[in-house]
Length: 458
Image 1 (cartoon, rainbow, N blue to C red):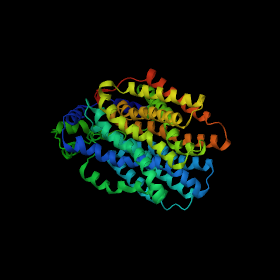
Image 2 (cartoon, one colour):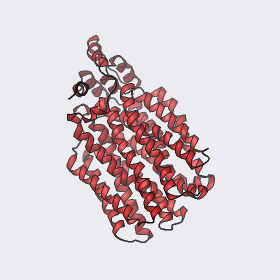
Image 3 (spheres, rainbow, N blue to C red):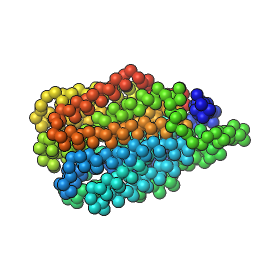
Image 4 (cartoon, rainbow, N blue to C red):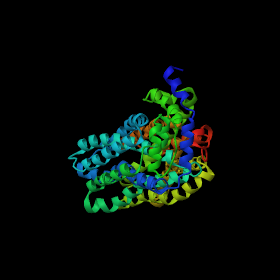
């Protein structure tokens, strides 16, 4: 092990100050921690998922207006995900070095501003370029916000707490789906994308009410800032001069957390498994989510209005189910839900690949496939954040989620090529089923449960 990796390995064990901060956060019952933080951050990140998926619902309109070839349709969808892939890696590392809040605020500012810029794109090339740059910000905002919320969450109810944030965050998919059925026919596709600028109105509230992560401050030796951060959340911690001296040496260690630290011997297996889960699940989930409206229209000849309604059914059903899952995942555990979702998705998609169905059963199986993979995606957010130590959490979330962005980047191109060549749609469903079953095997044989365990001890 080289000296830099060894230095980071030494930091894995929690310091006494970190344990005290963790206890203080577990005992907080204030409005800002229990309600404001997950609601405010979740509502802002609703527009992360809105921006990510809106392109799928405007694509049929774009295709007609600009005369797009399926390959260009795939490129437009993929451009944002290419940016997200790069942003998730780069900005996750910056959040370890400079803190969660500065990177989050900067990412959301860029994400929302560029959503507005998309509305004035004169053609597909300009839209592709803007969405790529916007993707950099979107890719960074998600892992950093997940990290921040996870570091505030109380140990015994972390799943339920995180569900509040995540439910709002993922509701952007449903909100964009439902809104598309009204906004696109009445106002046009530019309005649907432009509404992604709403977070600009909420950033000042974040900056005024929420502090830097107390866990990050304690981990990086900024002990003097810990009392102020906890006080802003309504908590209290008294630090002696000895506490400050004990924490100070960490500031002399390398400020930059290298991605190579994720592959140190004690962390390597976990990192590779998590990256593989994110990739396999996202290949199925994003493939179905982003292409379902266009497949319904171009492959099955379903009317656009009906296709949008069918596609909207999945996120709506998912939002109805997730409160129950979030309320029980601390007791049931993370893994049973993830395994069940992947198996259900695999079976539904395999059926679509092997048999022909009428419109009703066809839509139902697409919904089951999307819901099952979305359930695994829902679980892997908190599970991944719980699986990395504090000094690696943001970069670990960034690298892991970048695999989802990579899959999301490749899936539209894969489907676009299949549709362009006139090959059977069963090839698409077969590939999605294979990835869903692959994810199920990873969850079954390569993961351990993290529910109700303190972050400092996992």
